[in-house]
Image (cartoon, rainbow, N blue to C red; front, side, top):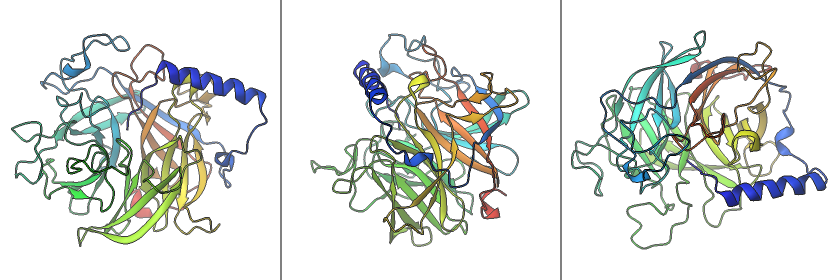
Length: 403
């Protein structure tokens, strides 16, 4: 999900910083590493911000014509951007999911939803785009009107934010507008009608019909994990459902054989209600990795963390137990891979991809919100960065998650 900083928000951040200097430091739940020390940057690669799908349609026409971070819309093609979900393949490549485009339903009608296939080259510090496929509904399974007559899906139809690959090679994708679950084949064609989440609707839900939504705008399925046995999905909302305690997020269980939600549900508690999650992936039967972040970027960013979250709730507080495994704003960089000294920061507003490469190594990518985010260099649109992070000890993950 995208968040753009206004001048008022920046002034608020500055005021909070001044107040923080004058007040005693509060206890920070994120500082308990639970036996994990400082993680280390082991690989860095980047895809330039101005990368477009070859021979693709113009996009960004509804953004106006004023330059944004030095880039003037509309754009000459479909940007390869907004990575909001990742799937590891067995040949060193990855499927990455672009989100709804330019940050809102109203301005993303000319952004075609797409899964890109990429290959990072950490020795060369580059990312190669090998191809990909668009999402579409040729069978007419979506029960509400789509933006395009050819039924190619756009960012005005769905805000796709999470993706897993099923054992049969098809894809399940989490959306924020419904929120919906989408099921697509290997070419991106929908195989089923969008699956609604019972009892929860966002303001963008096309079936709202004047009813009051009980979930915030674009606060649907930001993260989604697949069970290690391949039988269930675990979609995690980014926002709090109305009536739930502030800063608590629901994680559901979806049975793939029955194509239905089960009665099981868990709660992920944010360190601060102003935070958001960026991704969630499976570690084993009981544990998940979850990215938690603030809404800031660059030097202002304070919280960009990866937690190990356990459904067994051993402390009895009614929420997933959280253990910090990596602080993405404080990574050791003894080899100078990041080019900024002995400490590397991943200071992006939205960090929405984590993948387990081996039991101690994670891959992490940003959502660069092209052309809006400029967390790396003020006034310049962020690249799509792909880093690898070495943990101080193993996760003890089920081997099936990193084969």
